[in-house]
Length: 116
Image 1: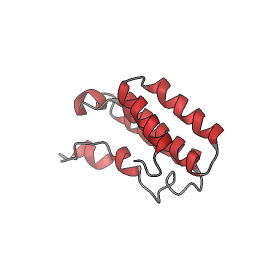
Image 2: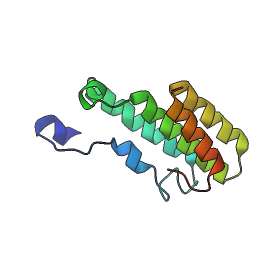
Image 3: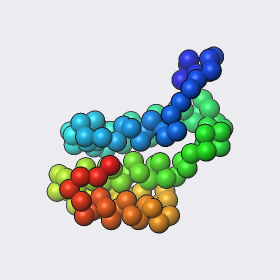
């Protein structure tokens, strides 16, 4: 973030938080699912604090990103057979975004053995 403040940066079309959603990371391995989610959200909030116009400039749907992170956490809880935590994360995801794709993510994460 400090480098981007002083130098021109090239980037990828998708937020890095999407790439954090993979097997083997803090959420994926299930060692501490809530910690992984909270770290991701804290990173997003810090970036928002430093770059208040981030979402408009990058044309990123903030709510969809946060919903996706919560669905991923819910999926990780499902993998651990903790349905109460799973349902809580899915509900939080739908609070961030009630767009059809969020519902599709929840359904896919509920039915599939692998989801990302």
